[in-house]
Amino acid sequence: MSTDIADPARPSAAAAAEGGPPAPKRAPNRLLLGAAGVAAFLLLWEAVPRLGIIPGRFLPPATEVLATLGERVLLPEFWIAVLDTLIAWGLGLAIAFAAAVVLGFVVGAVPALRRFTSSTVEFLRPIPSVALIPLAILLYGTDLASTLMLVIYAAFWQIYIQVLYGVGDIDPVAEQTARSYGLGRFARLRYVAWPSALPYLMTGLRLGASVALILAVTGQLIIGTPGLGEQIAVAQASGATALVYALIIATGALGVAVNVGLRALEWRALRWHVSVRGEENA
Image (tube, rainbow, N blue to C red; front, side):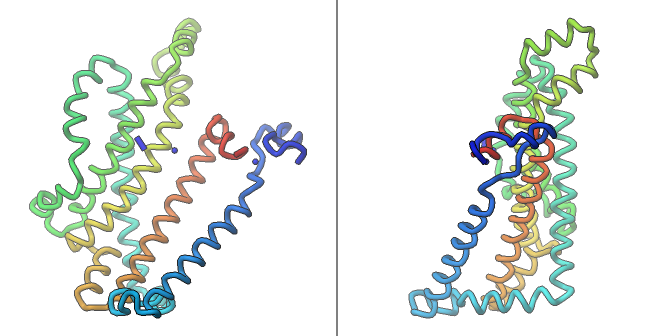
């Protein structure tokens, strides 16, 4: 699946002495370029309806949408909806993460069990989570559990497959060395299997977090459980086009915040790993 003064590519002497990687040198440039891209997009968005390319009733100008969003964030109902969305996302992701890690290490550590379950996994994994919406409504109605069912199912496979790859990528030399030094099963799991699988696990967590947020909003939008998705559906039904776009922007901002947070967590967990050091020096 789907994962920087003489020589800028080398850590400074002080950073090397401290044992930590240097701070990214090009981050300000990336931020400036990102801000310029957002500004250009907003200018284009503002011009398209103003010039009549797309009627304003279908695509309100960016200034109108942002003004609507500014008004909305002052209302407590908006933040209650954000909290409801975060609860569905966080709870579903936590359950999926715990289940995927436990099952992934158990199945991945036993080759026969992995072969035994591979066909079942390959059958269940491609099933779209949205296809389970009728089943979720049948089982749980419009309760939070219906959205959790979608979130858990979607996020679980993202993490589980990565854990399987991580456990399968253990260096056999390191494994044999650990055995020769008399390390027991738990010690090998802690000092060999866990560090080997951690980069895969963090990738799966980041992918699962994004998918979990998508399914949380989708479930609220279609099923009607409380959250930003439900507010989007209500705004669409009432013909409040600017509000629909404003809430969509809010969900997008929430997704960016989730991704930034997971990136920071990944950096802290894998600052020792060559992949993270390579990103910093890029």
